[in-house]
Amino acid sequence: MVYLICGVSKSGKSLVGEEIAAKNRLSIFSTDWLMMTLALNKSNNVNPAENDDIVSANMHSFLFELISQIISSGNNYVIEGVHITPELANSLIAEYPESIKSCFLGYKNLTVQEKDSELQQHKDKIKNTWFFDLNKNQYNDFLTEVIDRSKVIYEKCKKLNLKYFEITDIIQQKQDIINYLLN
Image 1 (cartoon, rainbow, N blue to C red):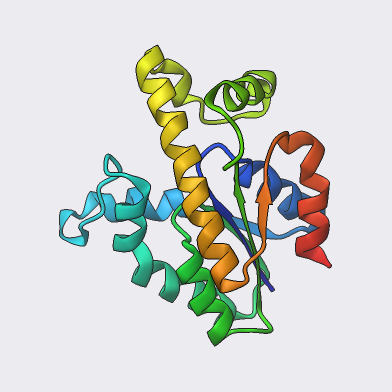
Image 2 (image 1 turned 180 degrees about the horizontal axis):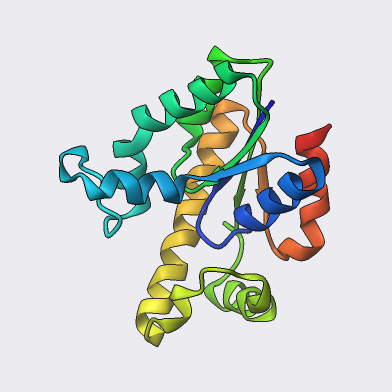
């Protein structure tokens, strides 16, 4: 089984993925690793400085093939990342219905202040804290962008009948997400 944990930045994908992988002795792969690898070769049109929608579109075929190869190998894996779009997850599920379990994490209903409060509360559990180095305006713009992206992902998930979790406190909600994926 391949478990896809998808959604917006700073929604808890890595936290959930790492816990599933550790408790079930699974390998884990972050789409960020593929993004950075592809970015080294400029002909791939993958630029980490672009917004997640553009990067995801440019990575779509690479991710589809990578995940297809993982499924073909028969290995169980956790794959997490912002670059797995609802459309990509839907395509993979259509191709491999017995081999994929996915969910999307977002926070479409939170305000910037509420998301900031959650991030501050759990910052000791966040590995990549680059966003805390932004100035106040950049930080607020970042949070506004990912809240808006959460709304888009939610609508796409609803249309494609994909599971979406509205994250208000990832620490309190992570077991529900894990239970959903593993059952």
